[in-house]
Image (cartoon, rainbow, N blue to C red; front, side, top):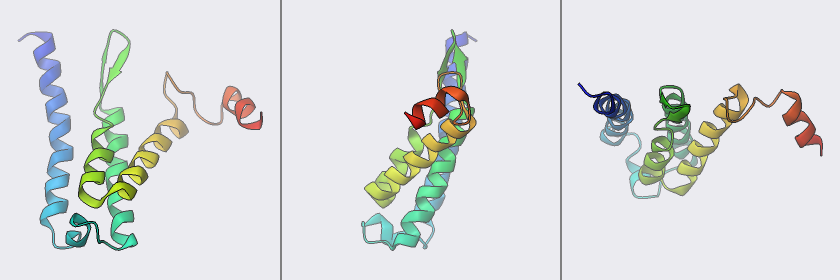
Length: 122
């Protein structure tokens, strides 16, 4: 099989994990209020945390092609926003982005490295 087709299949498999979680969340009776944008803050927070963790999963399960990471990290906050509204999407995005910055990546060093400490102080 061609390499690009194999990579496409791997990305589809990773996206299917998030789609299955979204299906389970929307099919359960718990977050029904959030589907019409009238959920409680507790429901929105739980969905933001769940999809924020899936965003972190999408970051670290990506592929590397020619030194660039190809991943599905944006899918978690998008689905959270569609399910529970903008606050859940923003929360999931902040959790996913915070996970990247706290652990660090080649593009963004961890917060405890000297370059971040200097920029935070200045």
